[in-house]
Image (tube, rainbow, N blue to C red; front, side, top):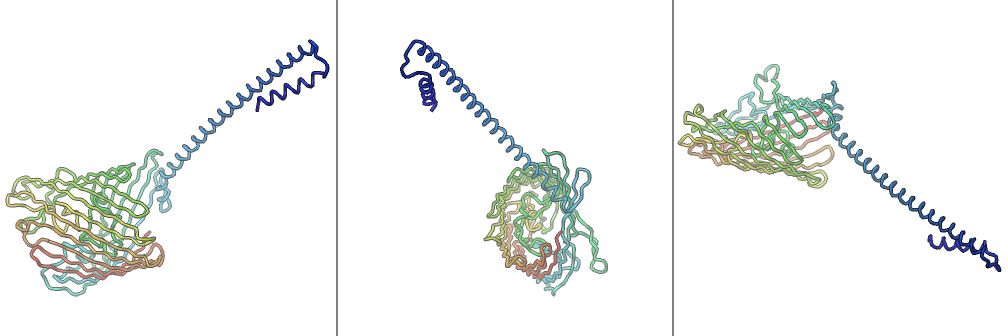
Length: 457
């Protein structure tokens, strides 16, 4: 295009400057000068065009760099927003003191429970009348009538804090109280119960320090039940002090050790001589379809001479648990847990059996167990839902060392319907049947009808 412009300019100039009949030397000289002038002009135009292209390239590079910087700033802003999201949520329910946001949560719950047992009477005021404890279902006695109790002991209060320590770090804490399994209460005059510490922990970035649910337990898989746990025989259930590191779906923890031992008469001894913590590794995988958790645990079970007078001994305990919550359609879900291992006693079903027994030489013999549960939740509407669930526990007790008075297996089933007239209120009705069988073959069952009203805040 530039070449055509040059030719046209030169031709037009020559035609304008040359008479039709004049071909003398002066005209030739003028044409030479004019051609030189035109070529210089063309060179200047080329130079200006090149400079314009260079300027355009430089401007484009600057614009691209500015765009990248803007995107980086946006990403940083999003990161900062995520870091302050939890304090903002907490501030909605609390208040700010200096650079710390203090918030609260919890619920008030009334339970009305009527239950009967086939193998003996449960004493008034016993925690066995508050929620299912499989290892305490009476066996071998006379059947009881239906015993009815009202209590609000499961009501819970949670304090949370979130402290601003700069954009690079997160510092939070939580303390949680309720009134379950505490002494000095009564059903005669005041129905007063002492508060107890459930959870108390600090989180700093990826680290947790304090008391909370064991890393070996998946709380997210628990069924939607009115009973305190629900599928207790098949459930990993443990709350204890620990140090935990979390990175994405990976969780690694060292947790409080405690060895429970079955004596030759079927009794229980807490040795208290542990030297190594329980080691737990866990991985969580989730998506729109639900979530699955795999967890493994290693334990060092230990006794010394002051426990049984038989000398010092230790044994390896281990276990594996797979659990999850799977979405079924838009609203329903299926929840499950399966656990197997040796020396897991105190982690399963509220310590249905112990971690180990003593053999004839006074050495520890870990007790092998397997357990699990399954639960299905169906939403009839936005305000009405139902749950059905069942669980099972089995122990391979060394009977020659434990006697026939220890639990061999336990199982239960439950069904409920829960109505929520408004979002924070649940009103439910639940029926449960549970059974316990000893190594001797004796068994006992428990039937329970529970009505609960719960207000979450």
